[in-house]
Length: 324
Image 1: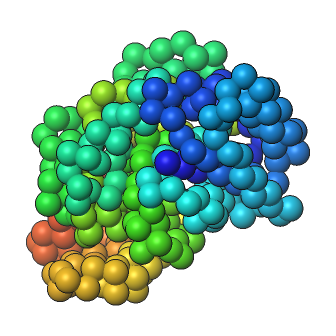
Image 2 (image 1 turned 180 degrees about the vertical axis):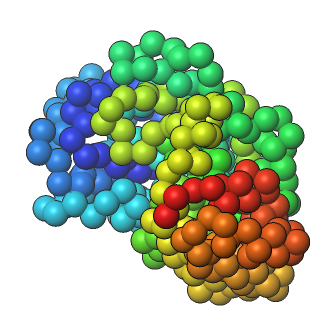
């Protein structure tokens, strides 16, 4: 059992996270800490905590440090941590969260109950910088209700993940075989999104409804949570579209290049990802003037791809009104 811990200037929160890992009811064998060029003593703090714990507990997990002299970025740093882990099961960890004491045990239970599953994610309790609970859970904030959670744990997970990623790496545990099949991770994708979609075309995934971690929200989050309320939705309608659509096109291109060779037993995957690529090409090439977009957006709407590969009417409205 391994933990892949990605860090970058997170010494202020790292202690609480490591203590929660060391207090797990199901112990871990190793912690692979991939540090992305921290300058605040993050690595030294981790070494001190593990050494202090080892003095009173001989079963303290090994600490393996991979230290980058120049930052790799979130995706490459986590890929490095995951590929450096030797356990059959690997739990992903952010430096600023805190695990429930049975986080590992509950995920292992899911893997045991469904031997084909390659990735287990969970709900998380959102907390503020001081660790005080916020009003909603992570999945609830992302708009993931009971029906969608069931679909993500079924054989239609791939269809859902083609629309948008709703699973967060800090809540994930994965099989080592998944990491090896998914590597190298495309740079246009975030590591957790890529692992989830590769798992969806393989052995599948499972979602635990219980909040197994406290997911801390603060100004220094490299990847945080945006509340999907009415204000947030209107804000996205006013946001420039060019950079976002270029990013979506790059992701669809990587998907069409990589996923068919990974999902060789499912020929429908190649057809679907090419169709998604065509959809993102249309969206990326829409005219800069809003009035001129109406025709191509309507034609694209009639193909059904707005609903198949996104949020349907929400994305139509976005494409019609967003500034360049």
